[in-house]
Image (tube, rainbow, N blue to C red; front, side):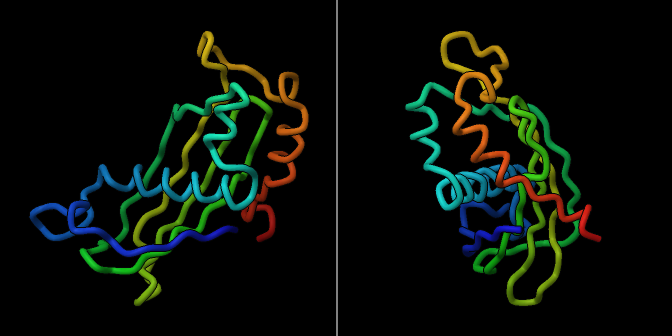
Length: 143
C-alpha cells in the first residue's frame, strides 16, 4: 500500500462545504501520478516512450465527508496488471480523525498515441512491463 496526502482546497468544495463528488476522480489521478513518479518514472516520461494510459472504468463508494482545510490521505495500490490493463484500488481517509471517507477502484489500459488501440506493454516495452508487474500488490490476498 502506498500513500499520498494533502489538504482539501477551497475550489474543490461545493455549497455544502464538502468536496464535490466529481473532484474525487481528480484526487485519485493526482495520487496515481505521484505513485508512478515515486515507484516507477514520472508519467510524462511514460508518454515520451510512446505510451499513454487512459482511464476506462471507475467504481466508487462515498462514506463520509471531507471539508475545506481537512488533511486527507489516499492509500492506494496497483492490484492487477495484465500488460494491457492496470487496476488500482484506493481508500481516502481524513488524516485528523482517521475516518474512511471514500473507496474507489479504477481501470486503465495501455496504448500508443498513433491509434489509441489497446497495446500490450509486455511486447512493446518489456522492461516497463517487468517494473509494473513488480509493483502489483493485492492486499485482499493478504487477509
